[in-house]
Length: 507
Image (cartoon, rainbow, N blue to C red; front, side, top):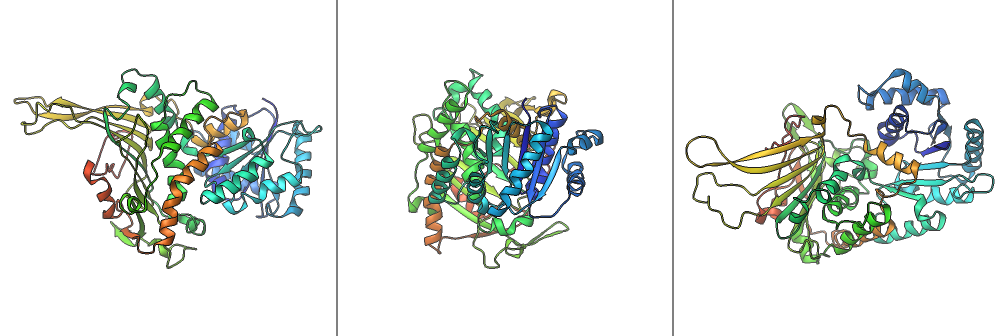
């Protein structure tokens, strides 16, 4: 691989220390970074190189798996990590950035291969690319012919209009193949394995449609609050933070048609078709099919949980949602009539991301007169924690009589004997380095997702009578969310204590 400089705007921030640096360290340890590389942190926080390396070293030990952290590897990795104290919002800072990049290029014999990562608040997503352009750092030049790529974290815009505006800026400064809109959910092994499950197994793909599937649940919840992100979160909320990016992406992977081949254009074409098939909601449907909530103070066990409005930098009268549950429908041949139920929330009983495929009941229930009649089959695809897949089958319970029980057929990546699932950020960073865009969101997909969600945001803003339900921190959300799924039964709530041995376990 050619030499490379990774420039992280927001190098002193939470994302950098928790995710980016540990992921880059893992790539280094696995020899998946170029032999000659440099990582340059850009932030207003003042550090010398040695101070910054010490700072990152502490967080590498904290956020890297114990079995993966190695002192010698960490020290060698950190020799290539540098810090520059600059204000990324100031045009005056970019000549100094350009000079520092020239120095690093000379040190590692780099032809100008730059990977920019915007680990900053979204308010800088517009500013930084414009200033890179003014400094001549956005395109290859005769002296620096290497590639220039930029990675942008979600949310990409805060509504349809802002997303279009932001996209216009980026596509006027960079080519589409230079822009990597990152969603770490698509870097998860199990999300990608959905494609293998569907398209590499002849017994599954014929069942993956409205003829055999009754409904689908997609859940992504956390057992924590907003922590130090109160200022950002209060301007964002669960719908923009999680639904627009993560949950709609997972839904699209579940619902997409088989690509002609597994390349960037074919894969992303099918993703966009799903977004374009999302059935728009009328105001009446929004009121009945979307529930929002906000966590309130509670005491669970020996622990006290503060209310969202008591969090640091949160408006004490905030109407920002920390929970969303909604029914989504897809208007196409494969999925017409199959509801998708998605939900996300903070301060839930556990942290879990999973998809539950509920298959239809058998057409003739010959066992209906029995005390325990069979349940419809389900497939649970666990994205986090303990990635894996469970398929439930109805079997006769041993003994006299003919009673039926539900038996799980289970696979987890841990069962492969230590084969690592890998880190989602590490996987996606490696793709960026190689210029592989398949698992990154294209601009038309971003626009289509906002087009679907914009009416919800607008109605919430226009009608203050639409309820924002409170729910006790540590619970499964507002009771009003149950009415969305009542016709199909109840939400699938996993165990509070998920371990390697209880992938299939419900409350």
